[in-house]
Image 1: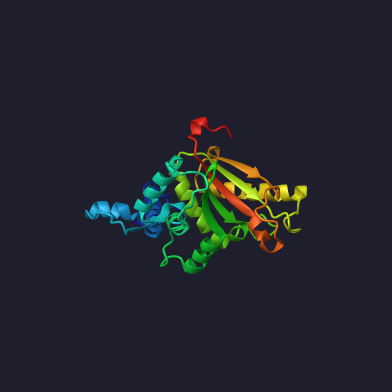
Image 2: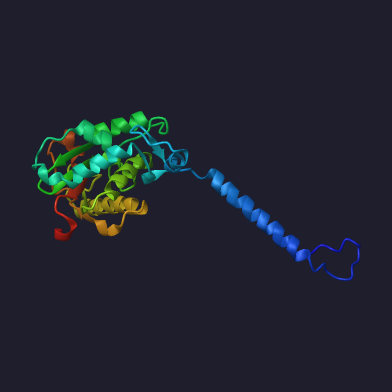
Length: 257
């Protein structure tokens, strides 16, 4: 409601009252924007440019959650170059697992309370190999999904964040191939249920990666059920249930997917 004139007259509304109301609205908007700026992370790269400081190899970029956060961009650049030039690596070549996984899944211990657990998960459940398809990042499903489900383990989703960052720097096509354990009834055995489970897992990972900004056109998904087991040993059957992220050797122009 508009304010009355200072002389106390009640003959009508003050014609300048709307200016006070508009001023109050502008003040509220400015306060809102200041609050947003205060709670938003500042990119250290911008700070470095302003201050004239150069980012060193040990700089930690904490731009925000998810794929925007990566410790040591030089390692990321070298990793990208290595993957893009994988044609020089023969199939079945032995890769340095420790070095490769350390580069691929960089985590900052200070900002990740579960750092040690995640590090163990990667050590135990992720492997990198080279075959005739290209470079393969193999995930045992226990790191991403509980047995028999396509429900993503939220506590390990940050590992997919790191994968997404690396994939975003590549020009090669990618396949998300899921396999189930034919020795497990919870995984559907060798029935059509197993193919459905594998398809839902592939789609879940695809949705997660595209939700981080990767274009869906970069991917294809594969559902193999239990048709390609790694072992027939029941005690090691969990190894059959896996996601294989295949980064193909041929350039996109020659890939027929």
